[in-house]
Length: 293
Image 1 (tube, rainbow, N blue to C red):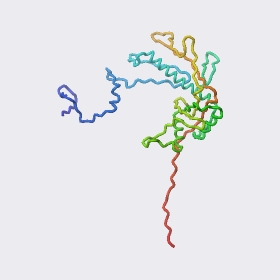
Image 2 (image 1 turned 30 degrees about the vertical axis):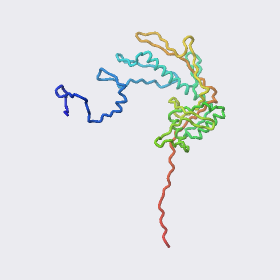
Image 3 (image 1 turned 90 degrees about the vertical axis):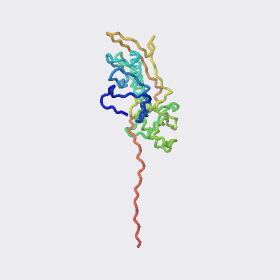
Image 4 (image 1 turned 45 degrees about the horizontal axis):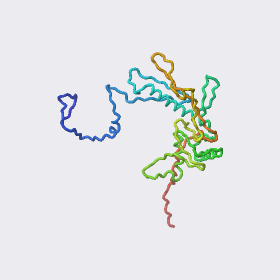
């Protein structure tokens, strides 16, 4: 077999007839995985990823951005693409607000109406005072909520990633819980907690504060939309045109009906939970043999 070094030309690149074989390993699992997504380019340089990122979620938000002049638009329809992104942003803001919103009734057109979120609405509160979350704190919250009248038939625990891991650590330590059916599987993913008052499902939410656990009775919670006559709610309409630019707005009004405050509870100011140290092994020493008198 000939080896070609340097610049390849029609004189030093031999042609072979028949099937081409390779003595090198040709198993390419990653290439096999992604080859169905192949695209073409007519340039030596090409973008290695077209990404977009939302603003930080807040109680009010607005989509903004630019499109590079002369660049090929990756969205088949720019208006539809921008509308979809704006709706995503609005959904994120609604999610954030329904959890963290602080109530405000507008007193004038210069003020915005703001809905109350679940954390402000929860009537039963257990404060950890920055101590580590324990099963005692959890049991106290369950009992206090039940005594206040909460119904545990559709109660969901909503938490951030940190508190989710704390829950797994706490309940992983109870006897028998950490013994999986298979001996080749490790780890814990706590999804339901059985209590004396009913089962609690666990929901992970990025918009929850890192040191708060919320217990929400889903059966009495609902979003409330306010329609604009003859337009509905969350509708798109054009604004006045300036130059060649076209502007639209998406308008909608939505609040949260959280039901009675005593239906919900929260545990606040949660401190970090760490894995318990394994039981220390006592040191062993060799005792000396007694001499014969």
